[in-house]
Image (tube, rainbow over all chains, first blue to last red; front, side):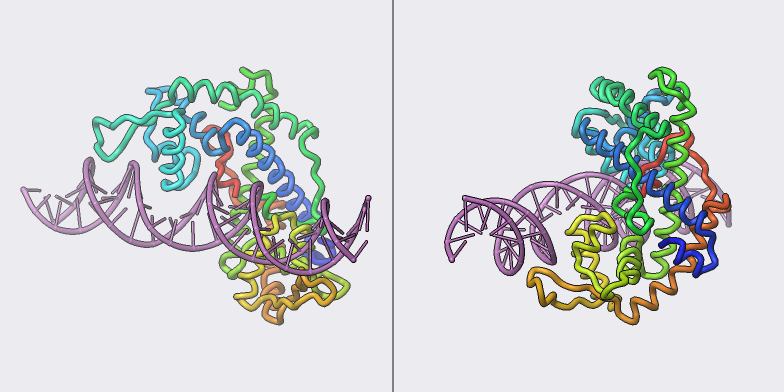
Length: 151
Length: 151
DNA sequence: TCCATTTAGTTATCATGGTAACGTAAATCG
DNA sequence: CGATTTACGTTACCATGATAACTAAATGGA
């Protein structure tokens, strides 16, 4: 089916299929990860925030913009996420003494614990995916990618 | 950095990196496609709905559930999307004579036109991606996947 | 120094995904 | 048949991504 459309538009069906398969595979993996994190009261974004703070070698704390830039997410999303993480007691924020516009974000003990608890399963899922033991990867009837799977 | 975490958890860094790179690549491709569709007043989901109807060999129309199942999307999302496509004049719905719970969805001339207009660029983007000429694929500083990029 | 520009964080709003629950219609089974 | 179960479309609500626009603070040049 992809073939029909692709050749009709002068595209190489193999390339098109390759791209679609990759998207499908990645999407299912992301779905899988998101489901795993949900079971632990996290999400991909919340997990990444904790990781980024955790591996900060210097002072163990970062400003919201710094985190947003490293994870490549917009500032409003970071604001919302940090508030929710704070509400759940996984991070704590303090005022920045040198810049009154800014804050410093640090992990709490509960945050550290949560992160450590999630890491093994996270690597397991990624590892299984690459060993071909990940989620089965049935393409859509048409071979096209489902947008829902893109999440 | 991935190495440090991965080896600390007994995972194969190469596998982990591989999974992260794939997710990153797919995410950027999806971003790219979404941006392309936005320029044409569509989205991935709206585009797929049109494709699924277009390639229906039998009667040129489908019920909302059939479309939802083929694209692997929830019913409420399909309801919303079909309403928006109808509002934009790209599809038309008629009552199903044999099942009063259901409807039949068909493309309008404008819908056909929009679909045909989008196909070449769509295949171009997919093809470029697989030929290595797609979007540059810089991993995050840490090698982890940005959730925003996952969209 | 003072005014303009940039930057940090926030708010408001939109888009797009999901689940739960509901009304109505069809189907199934006793 | 009639009662229960299943299925279709919808509504309501939540999560998570984005942009635009605002406030307050820092910065920089005339």
